[in-house]
Amino acid sequence: MLLCMSLKPEQTLDALNWRYATKQFDPERKIPADAWKVIEETLVLTPSSFGLQPWKFIVVEDPAMREQLLGESWNQSQVTDASHFVVLTSRTDLGSEDIDRWLDCMAKAQAKSLEALAPLKGMIAGFSERMSSQQRQEWNIRQSYIALGQLMTVAAVMGIDACPMEGISNSAYDRLLGIEGSGYATVVACALGYRHESDKYAATPKARFATSEVIERI
Amino acid sequence: MLLCMSLKPEQTLDALNWRYATKQFDPERKIPADAWKVIEETLVLTPSSFGLQPWKFIVVEDPAMREQLLGESWNQSQVTDASHFVVLTSRTDLGSEDIDRWLDCMAKAQAKSLEALAPLKGMIAGFSERMSSQQRQEWNIRQSYIALGQLMTVAAVMGIDACPMEGISNSAYDRLLGIEGSGYATVVACALGYRHESDKYAATPKARFATSEVIERI
Image (cartoon, rainbow over all chains, first blue to last red; front, side, top):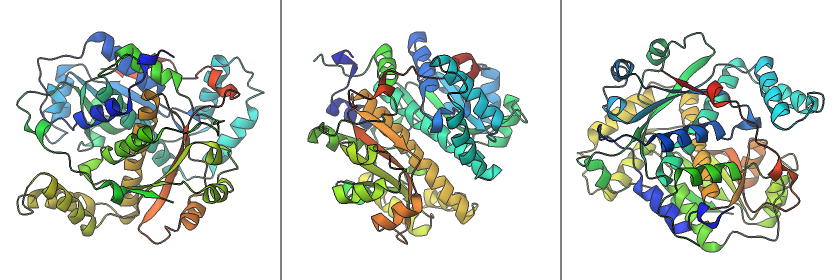
């Protein structure tokens, strides 16, 4: 590991203090292709429970589609103004085919036999079967929130602005994106790019509870 | 060490490729106090929906408590071997007192009057009231997963190892930590520190679906 690969503590803190939920993006500034490619790769690398990766990330490039999504997002201009716009979706259930797909992937990456992974398969299946279908879907959604957290942090340490967006019509997104009935459903969206110099929220002081209210030591 | 104000794309990717769910921590290596202080501050800075921060983070320092939690964590040695161990908890509901607490915090930080924040209060209350109590709890839990995602990413870019832990008995954690009935409940845990040189998982190839399976472009 190269030394410069890590941020010093105070640099990390600076990056997270610098970030904010960007309201106005500069529509003229685009994330460079090499940086965007890395962001996509970091999405792929997101950790998930058991490694199951119960998600797909839809990068909406088509301006006409962005316009349509805008109408299902309380007309928040980030949808169309941001350089990039990602819809995080998650699997609507988790069945044996999902587990098999993951074990196949793991077996290939780690040169293991499926027989050697059978105990793991049993463990995941046991865990999954103890949940209702709704609980499995919710579990998958939680994993997508890990991806959202990582995505916002990755953007911040790379000096890229982001705005997480829960205020969207998930069902309308599913319809517009053509994923209804696909086994994946919209969870949350994230706009990424660069803040517009006129966005007054960039200078608004962060409001956070005091550390003593949020962190407890036992 | 070279100073980096922000990470270049390839450095970010290197950091996320370097991280893994650490199975064996070196019990002799502690995270320096200044770095840990920053990690706590980054937890406080975690973004959340509407900024509500429906969480508390419990840093378990007491070795005897760690031993007790170990027994409720499938005896995964990370609980006791890692330098630091954090239990992420979330609010079990979201009522008007939570919204008021948040608006008070915001009003102070941004020198606004509560009257000026009344429209925001109405919006949050309307959003919250449309959900059932269970949905509100789940919404809060999702926010804690943002914190988990950010925490793992922050650790990675700071060169600190981490292991997210869903395999814990949440109700037993609540009981041991003394938070039963407090309005907060255990969501997930995260061990942080430094990998032991004998942890074979450090060198296990990452298993991720192909980018083309995870990222869709529209």
